[in-house]
Each structure stands twice: as structure tokens, then as C-alpha cells.
Image 1 (cartoon, one colour):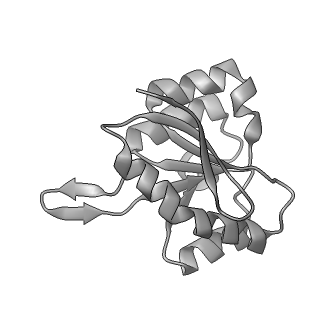
Image 2: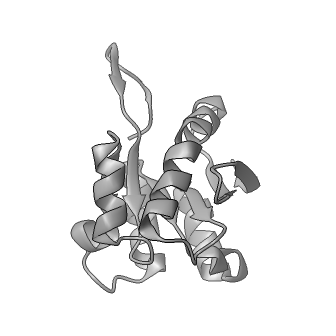
Amino acid sequence: MREGELGGVTRPVEFLVDEDLASRSVIELLRLAGMSVRTVPQEFGRGCLDVEWLPRAGERGLVVLTKDKAIRRSPLEIAAVREAKVPYFALSHGNLTAPQMAAAILAARPHIEAILRSRKGRRAIVARISSKGAVRVLETWP
């Protein structure tokens, strides 16, 4: 669920980490920092195809974290992100160590949450997270 109001109660952003990024070290570091993190294997099963879990992530209001940059070249995956209105944030450097990936995501977290708050209604987003935590929105759809 995204940060917002529901009956006067603020809901935290819930992140979904895909299989490419779901090393135990990264997940533990993010959770230790207070992030609400789920993984694709835990939620949808190991080996679940992106086009299968992306719509389900959208239904649940989860924010996707990945190191899979190839989505922009996959029409089926882009369609799944767009139709399910999934916010999809990919690390731009997949060759980082687990602590470096976690540090980049933690540095990006305030920027991600600001982007989510600034959207009017749910929108699909594809964005890149740099190794320093800078966030660049590449595409967005209503």
C-alpha cells in the first residue's frame, strides 16, 4: 500500500523486491532500516514470471524494487506495468554488492516516497535508482 490516508491512519509504503534483487542480505538490510519489504518468491512463488506477478503487485498497491533494467525493452512487461499501474524502480547498476544495493535503495527511499506522494491517483512509473540513490523517472502513464 502506498503512503496515504485511510480513515485517518497513515499507511506505509510497501515494497516488493523481485527475484533478481531478493538476496537475503539486501532484504535484511532494508528491513533493519525500517522498510516494509516483501519478495516475489515469498508472495507469488519462486520462478513466477514478471508478466504474472506484476499485475498482482499492482492490485496490492506494492512498489517494485529490482535490478532488472530490461523491462523497458519488453513490450509484455511494460504493458503489465502500465495496465496494473505499478511503480517500478530499478537499480541502474546491477553489479553492486548487497550492502551497496541496500545503501542505494535507502538513499533513494525519500525520493521514491516523494514521487509516490506527488502523483495524482495511481500511475504506472518506470524509474531508475543510481548507485548513489538518485532517482530518475524514465516513463509514467496515467
